[in-house]
Image (cartoon, rainbow over all chains, first blue to last red; front, side, top):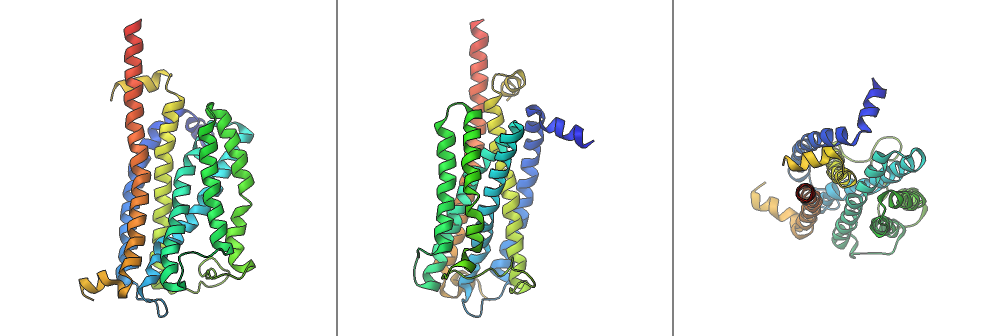
Length: 246
Length: 56
């Protein structure tokens, strides 16, 4: 049964039709969970005893930062699978992740900056956490630029996979930067070992937003992958028929 | 808590709402882009197919 599933998923036509259906379901789930997350985060959760209401930026900042790293690992992992086993779909997922990954990285940097101003008194410091996250943004931009610079899509996908894999080294650096170096950025409160040092009323909206962002990523990556499939398969009959029937 | 208190965010309104606003903008752009590209690809491919059929 599993074999059959993977065989079907490898067919671009089948992938196209199933992803089109998944996109609307993911979109609806994303909207519902985001609304719940916003309600618990902005209305129900109490103000922080040190940071007042400014800490509510956390509910978008932290999930965005998590996504920036998660998407990078997916992009590099899918790139490696495409590189080793020559699976086209993995190449497509890999390259479709780049723009949305860059967007979450930018969002994490911008919201962090906006949070930093009232709490640290500065928009930016060149410390380890912030600098390594900025490096992540440049890695994403490098991937996007490299992919667009090479005409043959399959060669481009291979080149990008290698660049993405080299950049993976930056991910543990970002994660451990707050422990390895002295920094203004606070340490982890959720992902550390043992009990998270964050109150449940704040943990719930944080996790809701994290789930919502994951759903959003899945939706956007399928939207982009669907376009990538159309472009690569534009001379096949099924794509011509599909376009003609619109 | 009144609605104006909610909007004021304990004096951090500018910071909190600009963060959420940016989030909305960035998430929206990432959805609108691929949707427009999808529509454009389908029309382009349909046009190309029609042109090819006329030639033969």
